[in-house]
Image (cartoon, rainbow, N blue to C red):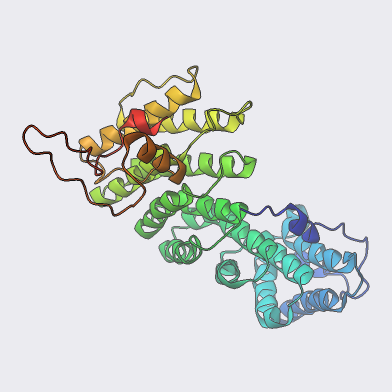
Length: 374
């Protein structure tokens, strides 16, 4: 998965101290507890001028764009200088202006700063714009800030008991999980899903974890953090879910993670993240199921891996998941080589030997945990 650091830097420019292009001081409005139409017009002019400053910025350093962004965010984030009503109305007006201007904000630096504004407003009214960006924005850095905005708003949505917003974000996540290449975007989406109790969010989380476990790299620090966050989210979901099929889906995600984590056993130096994630994965399973599979954090990684595979076997044998998830491709190939199973995935089993004959080993033998760990 691609890293975002070089691209996100476009949105982290230092703001210049003043913005002549933005309309005058809003000091007379900030302390109002009840805002008039005239007050709203003043706020709107302020935001429109800031957006226009972004659009008119042609300098390579984009300092004017960053300054316009910060001028907007200062109005909603400086709580000691304004009333809650002012900040609410300011955010509301800002979303109106940004919605109208969205089609004109086409360059990457402008769109990144645009998303940073939406993410920083702290308003649930921004959810539609953020969700749309996660699904359709062409720039990875923009999608990152949009996903982060949804994650920031998730606790607010939970506190306000907004099931429709939870379902909407779950639908957005479902639409992009299979195609999104950025680990950081996925991390923020799963962060949001893991806070929700909506059934659709739980289902998307379980399926998404199952899919992402097959492509997120534990050796990468961001990939390892994604795995860690997923484990915590799956644990919360399993403990609060009452639907049997939902619990099965969560355990299938756990089992997939147990099979897919594959530390390089012959490498001179294995990233510490493997041990950390494997320990967390085992501890989470022990907590939710009240069982143990003899996992020890001090044993070699090969034995830790075998203990995780024992979890998979136990889940299958007790019918808590319908089947064993597929092993990583390299492990499957090693198993086929060692068991003489051949290379064809659809190869039928060899016929049973006749009495007194020698016969051949069947090709349909399931890999055992011990074989899978070699």
